[in-house]
Length: 124
Image (cartoon, rainbow, N blue to C red; front, side, top):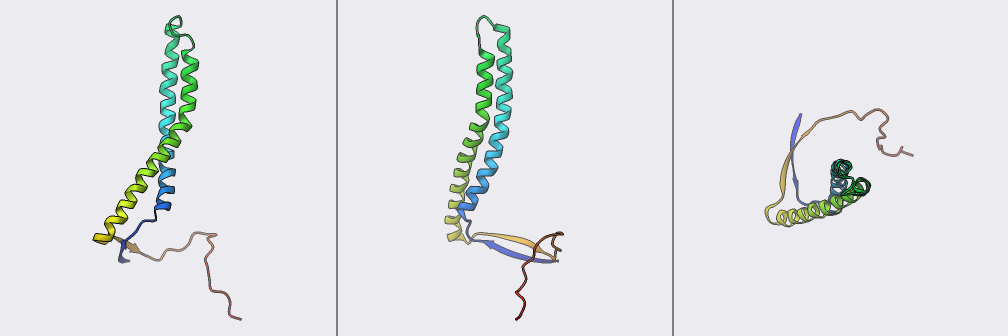
């Protein structure tokens, strides 16, 4: 087992944005599902006051369904923008202080079955 250190001097902002978008959109989707369940539950309570609030169940059901993709996109866009700004600030700070030092464990690992490895072309 060989321990090596590496310095992260710069973060590619586009790749950081893409990864953050997927993570935050997934988080937004999950939050949207919970939000839809809560709104649906509140809408079902409208049956208790059917004379005072007609149509509350249908309205809250529609809002709950629409909320899922909207929250996923809002979380994805806003979260990835904030993370990308953080990455840009990291790049700026790393210019002055040299970046993060990460220690990694380097070992020989056999590639999984069916994994294509690149080899040098055969000699002519």
